[in-house]
Image 1 (tube, rainbow, N blue to C red):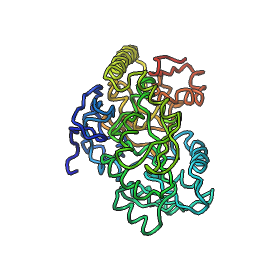
Image 2: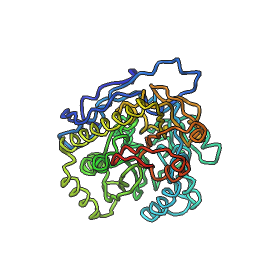
Image 3: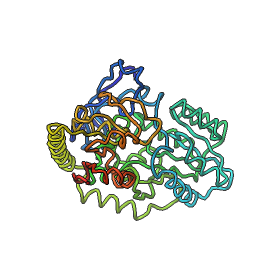
Image 4: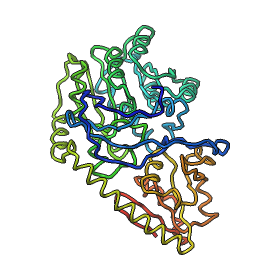
Length: 414
């Protein structure tokens, strides 16, 4: 892809050109393009952020794709910075080994392995491991810390090279990355080649039913090309020589699914859970445009509430800041139009401190400034972690501060 952004004319799963735009979010820059002061003069383009529904297979995807080189080669997110993921991965490893039942020393490959957090847990259980991640600096650091990681995009050709050098994998994992690759068919073909005959491919991805029902619209950004449900995924795997035989609901990322996939002749029976997910999707109408139209209407209401409150705060000469500096924060700030209504951001991730937010260039400061500058209001932008953030800053409330939580229900905590 030579262009920075291209329109997508057809469904990336089934190939049909029967797409309907069902949700139009405000265009944003690349969501994690936080930058140092030395880069503040460099323009940051914004790109369309439209959500489309395939009326043929039910897949949900973005209407435009940003060149992945613009997102991943200098990628800034590290797994260890996400609250609760380490404990989640420990349970994940136990589940995966129970499903696949590989002998000790068999190969586990993680596609999109980031800093190797998951693979370290497999290592501790006696498995050989190999990571694959296009973020070159993170891949290099993971290798230096004992988790061999290939710093490249996963392709069928790379899968063949891995088989030749390491053998086939008895477990392949892909967590919150399957939705991130433009040529998902190529990735699945690579997985088919790399997976041992009785092996298991396990993926986690955001679940579009939860996204819509819980209002987790800020999980929509250019890195996430697809918003999956079970119906189109089951068809997609079947068309590519694989079989989705089990699905579980998991709470991460505001609501996700964990899918278990085998070769078409893998021998494991399709569980009743798969049908339960299909029934739920039909019941909530997730493959119909109206589900997304309702979400869009709710977001319009929240935007109005925020603008009304923050306008009153400014008129009274009071201050408001934002808590959070993540990918999802960029979507939320842009769609709710908060860039000129917040004085600065604070964030707990030390990698974000002293950077500037994408587009609006809001400075990101250490949360300790809350008690030095005493802002009147703090808008909790990563609203799913509101209780955790409020719990850490009870002193701020005791000193008369107020938290604003925009979703899932708008509220002020004082």
